Image 1: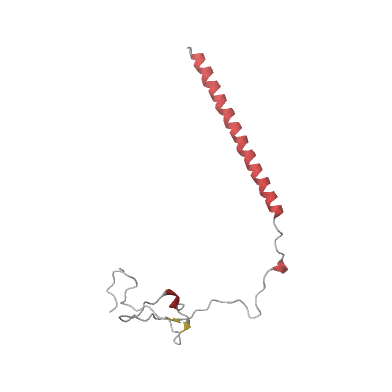
Image 2 (image 1 turned 135 degrees about the vertical axis):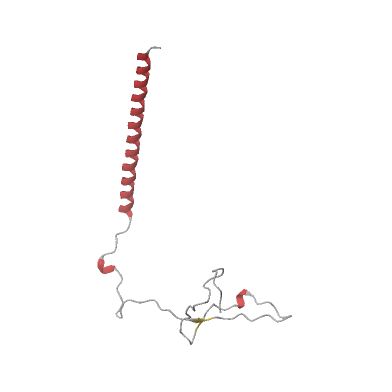
Length: 123
């Protein structure tokens, strides 16, 4: 084979690659156009968005804020020897009563903040 044949084959494969890339681009562009049209059809079937006068209103007292309170723990009684085991349906909701002392517990210097924190612990 001569050099001209190799050049002809290289040029034809280059043209074939270019044609395949162009056709692939057309397929992708067509798929994107189809997806947008399908999305528009779905949006047309949805109910209308609420108008400004249909939105919720603030209460007369103003915005509602988060409320923090301390709750009393509901201790589980220890089972004495021979007494039946405490079953899950006999447990109460955790922290079901409001605590009379509402002061928050604060961090004390010298107490470790977590297990394995490396501190000396509660001193």
